[in-house]
Structure formats: C-alpha cells, structure tokens
Image 1: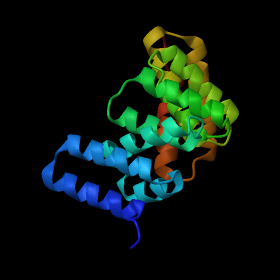
Image 2: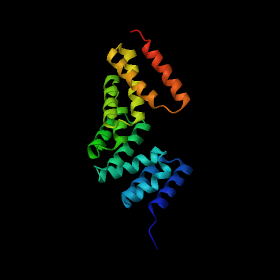
Image 3: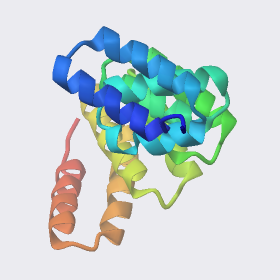
Image 4: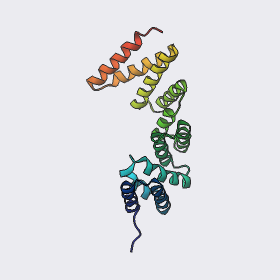
Length: 195
C-alpha cells in the first residue's frame, strides 16, 4: 500500500477544514503534511489552494524553515503574510531574503517595494525595481503612482518629474485606447499641477 500523496493529504485537510472551520486542526494537519513531503510535492499540491492563505502560508513556513534560501518559497510566504495582514516589516524581511537568495526574482523585488510603508522610500524602492527590470510595466506603473502621490503629499518637484517621466514611458508603450486615455489624463493633471 502506497503512502498518500501530498495532493491527497492536502485535499483531505482542506476538505475537513471547509467542513469544520477548525483552524487549529487545519494548522496541525498542515504541519504534518509539510514535514512529510518534499518541497516539489508540496508546491504542486498547493497550486489549487494558493488563494487560501491560511493553507499556503503555514506550508510555506515549513518549507522556508528547512530551505531558508528558497527564493520562491520566501516570496510565496511573504505574499501570504501580506495578504493576511502580518505587517510590512515581516513581509519586507522575507522579500529581502528572497532578493538575496535570487536577485533575479522579480516578485521578491515587487514585494520588497510594496512592503515599504514610508512613501518616499517606497517610491525609491520602485525606482530601483524599474532600474533592475526596465521592461517591467507593472513596476513602472507603481513608480508613477507612488511618485505622483509623493509629489502631491509633499509638494516635491523631483517626485513630480519622476511621475511624469514614468507615465510618459507607459503612454508610449500603451496598446489599448482605454490605457492611453487614462495615462493622458494623468499626465495632463500632473503637467498642470501647481504646488
């Protein structure tokens, strides 16, 4: 007789949780499952449950404990923590570890920037992400939005220039009419802004 697969174990644990809503039992089962299976098995089994952060988070905690330099697991854990409100300090620390483990992990860079709570430093982090990944349009949009917010909140002419440049870049690459319209409006507002 074969031992149950990670998928079977996880499916049972989630089904039981959905039936009973007993989080303490779920957490105990997830700990057992995570310790009984390999990272690859767990990662595959978690795919259908990535939106259930109370499932994904605890499993990735075990994976990160045994593989502290697993960048993908660190990012998945940071994301689960972010979405469950664990706080920017914890998320930023995990994202920083993921960036150190794999400097090319773009998701780690995104979480690192997102988790910064200070507007000026968050804008600077998004600038670093854009410099590292110049084709990353999502990062550039975040840079534009954060710089525009900073310009408005602190009457910062440098942040205003950064926002305008980022929006201009996005407008030059926009492929849909609704994108071009929204970006054009944002640029008109910023260009006509008087601090």
